[in-house]
Amino acid sequence: MAPSPSPKPKSASVSSQRWWRRCEERAWSLSSRFRYIGTRWLIAPSRPHRPLPSPRRRRLPGARSKQPLLRAWRWRVVGGGGGSEKAKNEPTVFLLHGVAGSGKTEIYLRALEQATAVGKRAIVLVPEIALTPQTIARFASRFPGRVAVLHSKLSVGEQFDEWWRIREGAFDVVIGSRGAIFAPQPDLGLIVIDEEHEWTYKQQEQSPRYHARDVAISLAELTGAVVILGSATPDTTSYYRSQRGDYRLLELPERIATGEKRVAVVDLREELKAGNRSIFSRSLVEGIKQALAAREQVILFLNRRGSATFVQCRDCGHVLRCKRCDVSLTYHSAREHLVCHQCNYRLAMPRVCPQCGSKRIKFLGTGTQKVEEELGRAFPQANLLRWDRDVTGGKYSHEEILDRFLSHEADVLIGTQMIAKGLDLPLVTLVGVINADVSLHLPDFRAGERTFQVLSQVAGRAGRGPLAGQVIVQSYTPEHYAIGCVAKQDYLSFYKQEISLRRQYQTPPFSRLARLLYTNPNNALCQKEAQRMHLLLKEERDSWGMDITLIGPSPAFIPRVRGRYRWQIILRGDDPVRLLAKVSLPQGWVVDIDPVSLL
Image (cartoon, rainbow, N blue to C red; front, top):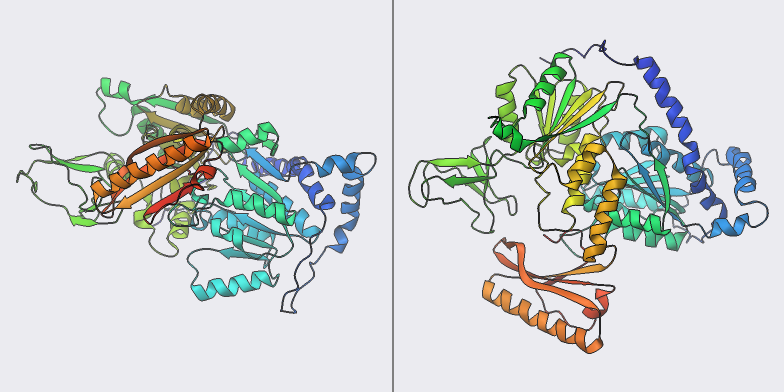
């Protein structure tokens, strides 16, 4: 039976009424943040639009009533002297850097209102539709009946019907994941990319391997549209471009919520020295106790699924691995299966070691299922809810989990990076990061940036209401600059250290990368072809005098996936595409220009 809604905490620093008044005042104060955005539509030349076959084009309601305001804008911003020429030279791409809970979505909504007021339409991209139901609901409520949502759950027929209605001009706003950038939206005047740092905007599994952000900027050049890139933790390259003047930087440094948010880092090495071998530090256990006693809510974050990341025999040391991929199998206790997270190969958990027959099998590593089990034993009175890929197979699974947590059917939400995606959970006062080092030491130059971004995003779920928030980050390497900057909630310090390393090692944005990946069922043939291609590239580079560095050939981070071995070559330079144009790549090679991951 679901518990009754949580009563208003007496310990709140401000009343709910004062908090909502503060939110309203803060929202109205955001108007000055997009005053430059609106000028673009006033000075942009109109683009011819091909007539559509359907006669059902409608005129935007309310456009006439907005004209006095727009005339005032035109006079104030572009009128008189050289103002018009100055405005024309302004960049069409805006980087909106606002801390979590600062009101970025309200900026998007008001920019959309300004665009529709002058007869323009918009495309809004979000990392994943299923993970942002609250954001979509806000857009739909502000523009009732004028928002189209494109997502992978639509059937082919539904997608066709929706795209045709978009082409006919039936919607002012199209919202979707990266593929929505290709929606045939007429009179396009605004493109918004929320959480622009997310790697899911890059299509990596199949060709064309495009990045939605690059497509959006190219589309804006063709249509005269404005692009808004929004994030609390912008991509390092995007922020560098804003510093260089390629993008106009808009900043929201303050949170709307009045509750204080504190971030503490716990050194797990000291926990071990103190005799605590639990996955929960003493500080985190105490914080959970206090939150539960006050009938508040808790989020626990760990970016690993399953109960144990690998299973090993304690006698012979054998590790159970996937028969098609060079990775260990992850144990999932719910069904007592071993699962490969690369190809989904499944195996019933054996009772004895298949190598030596020993029964001494040990489960090592931690995943979200194990966190749920351990927490259930430590706090049997707490209602727990888990949010990861293993429990979200249904069409509306994400919405159902979010609704249950919002209605306080659960006290603690345990999840992977899904729980970091722009959720507004006012009763969450504690966020615990079980292990901040999961992605920190991977062999990728973006590992530190990815860690800082995901930890900052999940930390932003705490203290979004009138109650104070607390974030506890557990780490074995608290001295790392990414962890330290999360604790200080200081993006600028992180950026300065990260860009210094990028400059030192000449990685993007100081160069461009191209990743060449070759796969073959035979490892010897795969290696031989990779070496042949490396020699060919080296000869062409030297003959044309190109300043391009070749890294490799070498086995990929996961050497074999789905029965095919993988070797790669990395090209680094100002323009690696010039070198690739000089060679012919046989079948089996995959080329990724500006890859978001080298793993």
